[in-house]
Image (cartoon, rainbow, N blue to C red; front, top):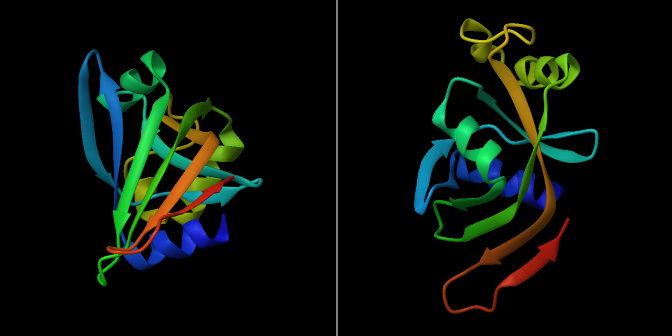
Length: 131
């Protein structure tokens, strides 16, 4: 997990893909952190990504570093609506407290399970790990 988090720190942002019906949906994200030994991300229940994850929890992330290495990560998103999980994310990303509060009825978190990660460099074999 440490290698994933370091890669994302180096990348800055990543793209997260979900499915809506038969159409893939991709958007930029910047929040993925270790909480209780799992990878967590945050969103709002009013956003389309929330509805997409509730209908089909499969998700894939993709990030690239400035030196053109890339990482793909895929797994299943599981909602953790607990106050503690949301509060933890907001403590790590305090700028989000302008829009969210752990008990506002909108703020929620997801963790990833059954995670596989592929680290790639052009011309080199991929390194595949499972978390």
